[in-house]
Length: 541
Image (cartoon, rainbow, N blue to C red; front, side, top):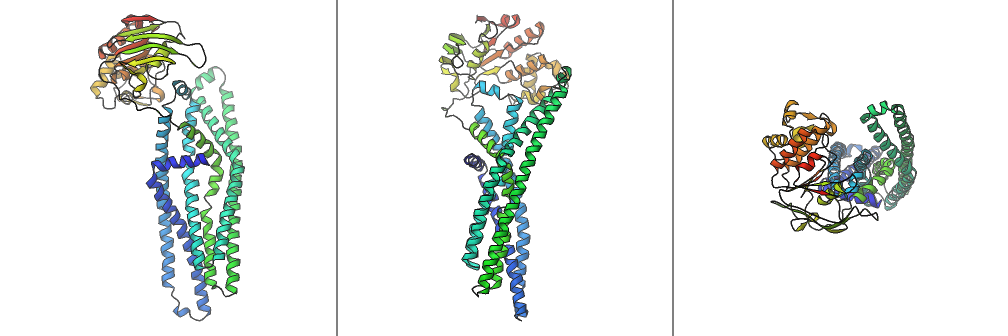
């Protein structure tokens, strides 16, 4: 529960005012419900008693009936407002929680972020945040509002009826409701967690089925993938059936608690009325109020069913949102920058160092190509220059400042894996420069020999499919390079930038980049002769 409370506090931090208003409306709805039923019970019994006593002609029926109508209508409107406000606040709090989560993940090491690129990991991150919508809506807001209503009912019933009736109702609801919740959580926690795990497995397998169906069919694995999807869905349905059973059992147990509270109020109130200590109408207030207070514990049955998935999601999100304490970062450097490696050593764990006592300086406007066999450390040098990896010894600096001292993005890295989004070509380009004009976009495309291709596809408004579908591999590569040009970086890091391009296009792209960024220090991990030929200096690793 500590993790769930931590998540609730995070959500309150982002939407405190709206959630507090929703909490106040939730409590008001419960209070009005108890008042409505208690007043109705008193009104019926008091009117009957007045008729039996022969004083019905002078009994005031107008003000109680008007109050009953007022409470009924106002309670309905308040319930609507509470639902709209709390759900809207929860959705906005979840959106801010996603931003907090992604901001925390962005501080993680490059190796960890690479592992998060898989469909299953990304699917888990999205699903975990979605699972937390029940934390305010079905757990803490109902608990707090219900607890406040129970305490208020204890005080009011002690005043209007009798303290013994009030204590009996309060004790049965508090102890009985708590016992039912603990019992339900214990029984539903495991199947709820299994249902969520199976749902994640089904989603990941189904995404694989849709996105790679051609390859699966080619290798004869399509039937096996279908069986795997059905197996995951069967496991989810089995676990969900068990969870639903626990939810219904918890609901039935809460109804028993409510019945016991109402019966106790009726028995104690009836005994006191028979003894002449209170009137029958006052005894009716205790009985009907106890019936209405069932609403304070009813929402917890849903929390019981979802507690397993919520606890698991809260643990993972809490662990991922714990951001390390970092020193204040410097803003991006302005003007020409030189990139310097001074006695840099890098190793992964206890393995043999990938780089040892590495030294290199790339001056503004200079192009340096790194060549060597695969695995020798070319991409590692680029990641160190981008600040994505931390060296064991030595310094990587922009002019005289460590590259890690700047805000992320001080250098621009174009890695081997191109990343595009579903949307227009202009939207993909403006990820790097949101304020860029159409003329600037066309200039970047021209620098990468992609302007005629884009014009033939419909211009900047041409839409791409998921992950940039609609472009060839070489066109995708050039679009990413155009996006890098739009940032106007002082240090540009390129990892095999012309992979998949023919010789003529490669030469045009490299020349276009040099013309567009004449003062940039450019470091290239180069396998191809075209890339090495475009460099001012070649360094063998």
